[in-house]
Image (cartoon, rainbow, N blue to C red; front, side, top):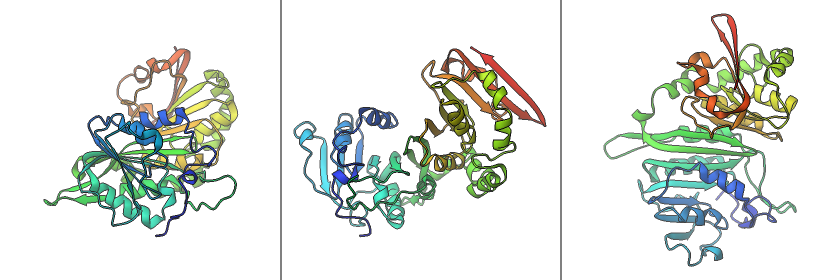
Length: 374
């Protein structure tokens, strides 16, 4: 067993002084990313002190919560959920007996950082086998924070770049008795503060081929993106880079009237250069979305260790929805030319009254800027 078998429950949840007080806002954020689980079978790996077990048990038909510390029912769950079962087991052990094709949702919260690379890879392969076709895998990990006791107690963990987890789970596959192949398709990929969220869906391999695979396996491989970045500067993968951002800052700000505390949606965020420029120079909050999994993975890497208000997410801007009046500004660089129809029609409802919708489009060697105040 390569991971620490002696870490206490308290130690596995950030600082021990805070372990029993998981922030309500943090829990709400996580639960909002889950698919519907009414009537579903849920497997929770690494239950800790059971905060999420209770929340999952409110909706799921059955929850099996596994942890290596003990199999006692948390006191605050006693008698409240007859549909929750608890098992003391090592999730990294190949002896863990979970029936294939039996789980609708696997829920894992800051567990994988306690496992070695090899243990993560082996567990990922078994997770795919446990999931039903159409079942989901939810992961939350921390890349920049080593959980445990701030008093200095030993708590070996493995903080990793998000790209490691994305690669491991993208490469997972399994076969049924008829020879059909199944693999995980990334449905949501989001960075909020120091935490990364993944939501994967188990699909027939034939169902997951197409445009997304072309984007990440053909058009923009990670090594190609990093090569572009070495040319154009950290955070940028296309011409212009940071130098252009500095040169056009005055014009950029005068058009958008950016003010501290405003919220900006950047459509086509790429690898984070524009987001961090806006945050660091104008003290705004930025949400960056992009179709490219590899792009957003590298943006996540750049976010590690930065204390700023930036979120990144893999999302299709023509399908992604937000509550009305969420943003003060919507910005897009060289992205709108790839969308059919009037660009502003996709975004108007999301902008607060008096906000701006700015598109800087580079097409066929000509610059074209569209600015609309709503």
